Length: 269
Image 1 (cartoon, rainbow, N blue to C red):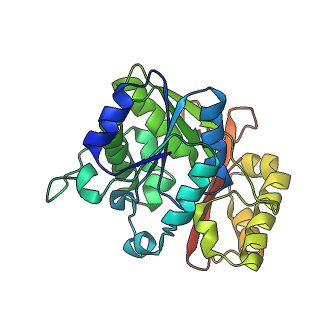
Image 2 (image 1 turned 90 degrees about the horizontal axis):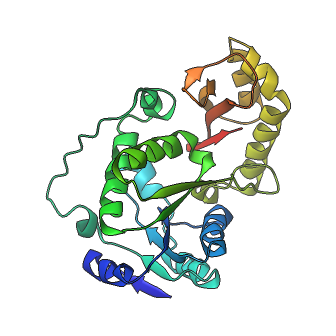
């Protein structure tokens, strides 16, 4: 497994590869990331993982500094799962300019949910994706559907800007408790993990009623009673057009963002 830290070096290595599968991450890898790696390996692709904590997508500075960075463990996980190359760029490799100006035109659906509660987040996501893909000339990009709104945004951006690149959505991997695996879970204690699992089970049992009910306050209050400290949103959208829906269908999806202590978690089903 090669560990590369500069853009020039990674470009040289990838230039010789015919089919490249790319798994971009912020690090703090878990079984969800491993599932993305395995999807790439199953396709017999040269599998590249990037580890870069992108400050631009953190609208909360405390969240940025609190984000787990167990680099040694991450590299061990990559090696055990037969990753071919890990790209760990320094800040200057991605953002060489002294001051970064972000001016990305985003679709309207970026104004709701994560876009509403995390101002600047999606602009930061697209900026780093744009810059990473300019360095990494890959053929397949593997992304999890836990970050569903982000997945759709990146897929739209790639469709308009990278015609030879295909996005592969991958299912959400869950802990035995039911909570969606996330790097932020490492900041929770076992009891809090169980709380997240109970919230997921509650949403799963009630998803049809949540979709049908115009006022979601009853369900938000139930999530608080289960142990969440705050609920940013509980929404239902038709995923073909990202319009709110009260009609249960295969295109309807329930989205939630909530806090356990100060740790913010998202999920969808």
